[in-house]
Image (cartoon, rainbow, N blue to C red):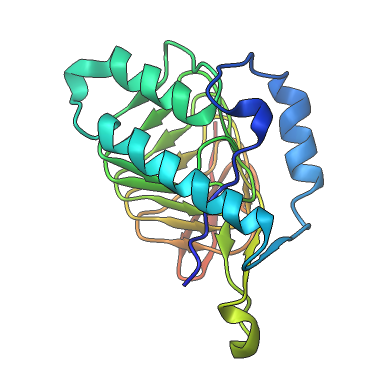
Length: 214
């Protein structure tokens, strides 16, 4: 199976760059969340995707040797991974896994618990104050359902996690989904559709259970 990984644009290789305006970036992601990116096998784009996988594996291997006491080093390596400096309030507990990195956007005061997996080929935007529990998978990429096309292409759609959302332990969020601000995705859920703001959603597939009062 072709690895569903993020590409590494030349402009991002080996450098850290300033984060663009998050409000504009998130609006762009949400506006484009119905667009599917398709990468055929044996093309320059698929070769770049594979190179990005190898780069991500090398960086995360180093990151995963660190502990909670190495928070500054974790932030430095994560910044290298995504190609832009994360805020000092960002906290991630290793291990962490990804097949890319440059298409991840992370806000301030974001917490990522251990053993999470981010596939960011379609674009992954995590807003300020988001909490992500252990064993959460944010998977923007996959393959066509048709058997004749399944191994021939990688497809991807963006994921947007709104401000102050909480993604609880073991949840999986699929590409094309936006989780609204202040919302909670219950543990073990599989999210295939948008979650409105200020809601509790859960189940497989996840559905809105109730609204959340401030």
